Image 1 (cartoon, rainbow, N blue to C red):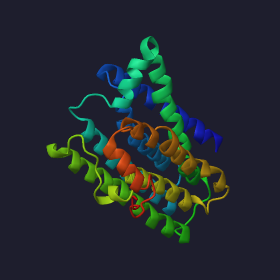
Image 2: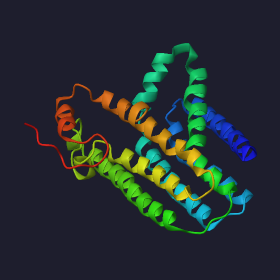
Image 3: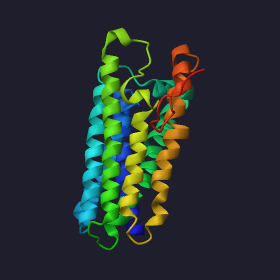
Length: 257
């Protein structure tokens, strides 16, 4: 088990370093967002070709590959012909002379570290005793499909909303965004909890609950919701939207007194 994790660490170390070099050449650190999904696919490819694959493992590889490809294409399309994402641009100004070192350590290598934590249940499943499909597989798959729908549909609805010049400066409050301020993050979190749920029947899998916990904490308290909502702080339309709309879990809008 330790050997495979070390090998995956080395693969991601090289992968992250390559993307850091690309970011220096492109002069934009938001390429890290594009690199996020394919990093998981790379590890799944390594596991598939290195270890005997059970039916459940193949399903896990397929789910991650499907998720990673869609997300990477979506982010590339969203960022194409635009300036660097505001979060990375702020760090570029804030870090000053230490920008390149901190970018390498705090953006690319740190992202690689979290990637390994989040994909750890799949690494464990790859080397554990083979299992066939079971009730956990079916329930997890159904929940994953729901999560994928929320993420993909929310991203598409937001892209359509922003593409209309009449909506410039406005807050999307329709579709899934009527029920959650971050339905795409809800979908992301649900997908990773579903993947962990699928791996529960594998021996000693409970230790890898750190995977869905990590992505939940990152999106809810660190790099996801807090940074995006800070951007709109003080915006009257957003503050009103915030009062009646659930932050993450889709719920009926609250009535404002």
